Image 1 (cartoon, rainbow, N blue to C red):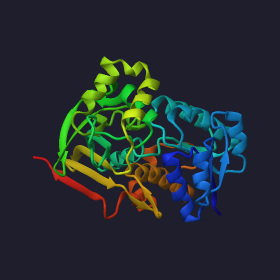
Image 2 (cartoon, helix red, strand yellow; image 1 turned 180 degrees about the vertical axis):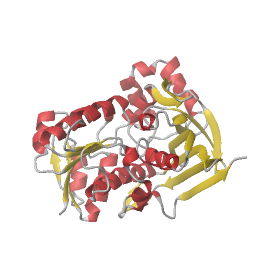
Image 3 (tube, rainbow, N blue to C red; image 1 turned 90 degrees about the vertical axis):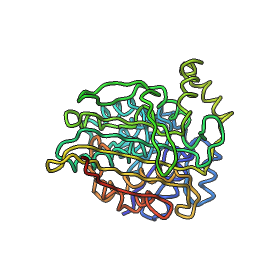
Image 4 (tube, one colour; image 1 turned 45 degrees about the horizontal axis):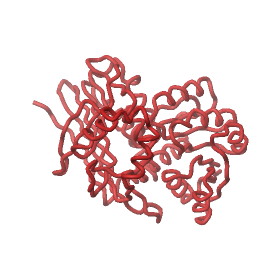
Length: 371
């Protein structure tokens, strides 16, 4: 029997989720939004839609009658309302939020529920945590876990060396909120835009710095089991200094709406992007100090006959893979579901998870013995 899915939010990522799920024939997908233009685009491609004010919790709850699951592709600040509506309507819940506060609230909503609530199902948080946890489990004793992800323009031209490839609200939020980390075995909060480091991959120079939300629930899962755990966003060199100037010196962190307007006016979007994933896990195995490395470099390409940017492919592909694994019974069927509960092999073997592979992907998984 097909799973009936309510897709809440028909923006850039929502459109991609709709196409991927609709293409399989195993999901009855209906897209909800209040933007008539976004819905019209899906209607023209044969995907059913329904106009709903998604900020109106009672209206959303009523619209959810008869559905099996809800996929939330809205901005992070609506996640709690949408999760509450899902619980009230008796449907399973999946989202893409990177917001720590929203995730904690959704966990409380999921407590003792017969429904499954699975937030953070995107790239980071999401896939990056699945990889890090899988690598950590291969070690007898884990010393250090480093998680690095970048959604970057393939051809940077402006001073920021950046283009808008995903949610501006999410981008600003991760640049402004405190970041979880484990240092010297203790969980602590670190400041966003700090902890700058530089590295090169495939001959290209990058910088990385603290941003919020990318660890998901890994700090709790690996508490007492790892000395160092952190997540950093990857950008081209120079980006962090300019953002720190905007957010700190010009105090735009206190005027997020103004910053959003500025970025939308001045920084173009692009579909010619690249997603960089870089995870290293160091520790002991069979008495030897080793390091496992997992990398992916994913470019924009066609998926299901539709051109998609790299961030669309990785974000929509991840949540679709996890929904598909849930449908197949691979994941827990009730309560709060963490990303770490997703088996990496099952994810990569899934029809949607395979979007992380292919001819346009440079993929390596290497193990080094350290002297």
